[in-house]
Length: 477
Image 1 (tube, one colour):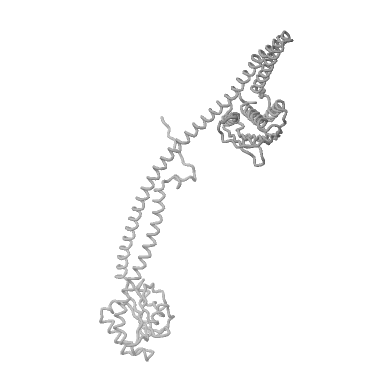
Image 2 (spheres, helix red, strand yellow):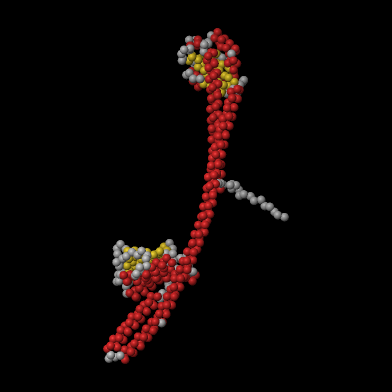
């Protein structure tokens, strides 16, 4: 029977992360949040504006009627501080017999100083509110009140909210305010109108927000799909490039290893050729010189034959010296047991023995365990550079500078000759330079020849201390 084990997600780790979402998904979530907040703020603000607009429109209409009905009855307040009984009766008659009176729940007439001259609280004095102050300045103000003010105690038990309106009453033909009429209306019809208007505004804002969200989401989704396709293509191309770079690195390593083994093999071949030259043609030439001595003895007293034999002897001696020199140059010393520093010293000693000219060695931080191909390349480059210095600047001092840093060996050989700059071509007399460059580049290094400002030539070669992965038989462990 198969046993199913539920896999629990690590505690505290979310089911998804923001960075794992696509661009379109992140935009949809962010824009939805922003648009919802914007919709709520806009809807609230529009609703508040509609509410204020409806209240002010209703209050302005009611204020116009109240002013037309009451202003005539209140003219005596311009010269008196109280309304006469006749005027109070007239106001009550108007409120009882007109449609406006049936819409008004309560009315008060305010005299200066917060004194009520008409209404349920007639004769009382109350604090002057901000709306009342504005009315005394000639402004109509209206709002929905919760009846918490002291002068509204009589209506507080009957209503929860009322529309409170303040209307300035002026002397006819003048801008002088002689009284303020405060009246209250029920909010039932007005609240229904406000609610209907706000519902329409919310619907309009919501529809606009939805259309905006859908439009932006569609545009971003298309862009996100394009980016996703481009990213997939780019990842594929990057993967291909990484594979090619890996293959190139592998091929470069194989080529470097092959070049290093070839260089070591070439040196072994040259050593064998040197031995063959020494054991073959050199011995034959030595034997020929010995036989020539016996012939010279028999030719004694014959000047013509002696001269001919002397010429042959000189040619044979020159040939023997040349063969021995070639054999010596071809034969590479046994470098396997030498360190890099000892290898360079050996090259300078061989140069001093051949030419009689000293060369100084300046070596810094040279490691001991260096592969044989690197030592062979360093030896041959120093050997050939010093030979060129002896050929083009005879008798001049030469110097070899060696430095190993960052996995690279830098060799700089300078002389005091006339100096020249080599561009890398294989011209006559520069075949040794081509060989040095090929040796350095076969290990993945560089080679340059420049004229020094103070005079002379500087040969510089840079080779890696451990080119690619040296073959085990090439390591000096």
